[in-house]
Image 1: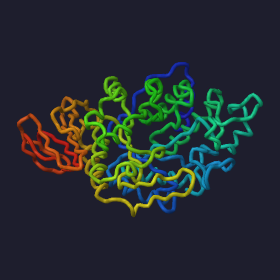
Image 2: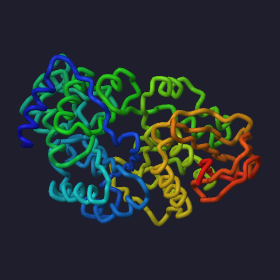
Image 3: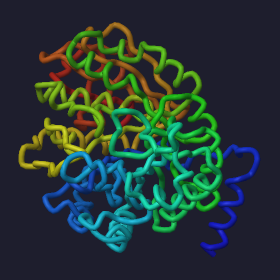
Image 4: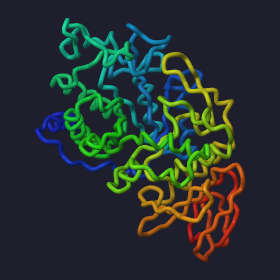
Length: 431
């Protein structure tokens, strides 16, 4: 059966016109947790990470997104371990991290716990010692002298694939189908804008033919890529604006007042929202107080879009893990109080449809440093209040009724009350 599906997928992928295929039904409820297997545990292996999947599930997320775990190139390697984005075998696991069977066991256990697994695919380039560089030199971009080149001068550890080449495209589609056969639930396409849109328009139907519920995430903010080939794309602006709010540089509700956010809301384009990722400094290194980190978490988990949490963010780790050298996460430095906040907010998010697919309307008349907005569907309205100030703030709602805070479990009489530093309240008008 699988062989039949794969064949059908490849044929469909090379159809002349990309088909309109829906995003996975589970995407609006998705909460992504980004894991770099190589440094997630002291061992840096899939076996060790599998043993910690229950802890990830307990946090309240529902999707694990894995940075590349493939064998890394040795030729022109950066650092002692090399970049995970310098890949010399697309269908294997780095022996230091385990075996393909270890990966399969990881996916199986994740699924048992109700977690989906999304993996990175890196199709713009390979390692310099990938077999294709010698067996199929014509599959790479070359200079006038016939030498394979890097994608740009800074990326000296990788060789640029010619992804317009038909044989390259077919091979890359086969790579995607291989990992779907291993049970993965989606792909995050690294540097997707560096690969022709026409390729992704072939890749998408091939993957959807195998599994219509597969998630395709583009590492780009370009609307054409999202509209024509991907289910989800990056919000490039939100992180810096969230930091601006957290540092009290702009009023809290001004976070939503920028063209990128407004255009995605009007056009109903879902975006991946984040405070940090592997390409960014830790949010804990930018914001130096627990209340502000709690408030930032509140914003991330209540704004429209699909939230991403980079492993360690939920406990406030401040050191950005290296992509080139050993850098196991020091979980002992984490703050349990921040983790508890993430757990509570993720639990509330999971049960409120308004936070998954609802619209957004700002609530006026609140203090400058309080984000106040309503997330709403026809069936549900949730009022969100977030205090970014280091002091308690007086908030008020004009509607005369009792409110029920889904985070603390408290009933709050309508009118005016105090919102504590860093506190997020998610209010419904019924228990």
